[in-house]
Amino acid sequence: MMALCLVNTLAAVTLAAGDFTLAWMHSIERVRWEEVWRVDGGELVLDTVRVRGHAAGMEPAAAAVLRDGVWEWHPHTRHALLRLTRSPYTADYEWCEGEAPCVPMSALIASDGGVTELRVCPAADPR
Image (cartoon, rainbow, N blue to C red; front, top):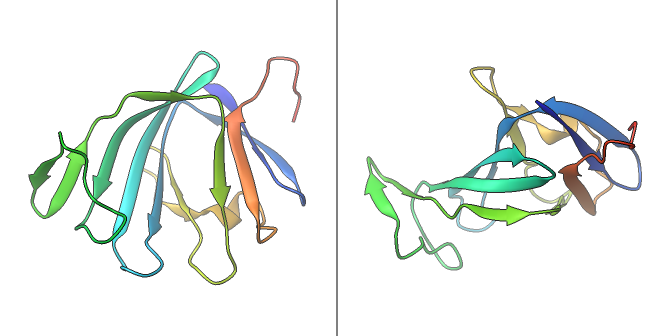
């Protein structure tokens, strides 16, 4: 497990996580989107994307496979930072780890109505 930093203008929170899922409901199309992430060294790796349907702006990747109504693909892209826009007008992201029930991101860090950054914490960063 690595330390993950969640940071916005209101707070900074450190979480111990190796693999996690970010999920949200598209604000207009009402389609659930899930991204499975893992920590690899100092980067976040997007392993799997699952979309329960598709609509404008939510087209599945060319390599996506449809299983039981869910499009799934494996980008394996690497990211140093995720910028998660959190609006008071839409449902919050859900944070899921292992077999535990998913929780709203607000249970981990309050929303400032703007962007919450998610990154692997530098070794020297005690947050």
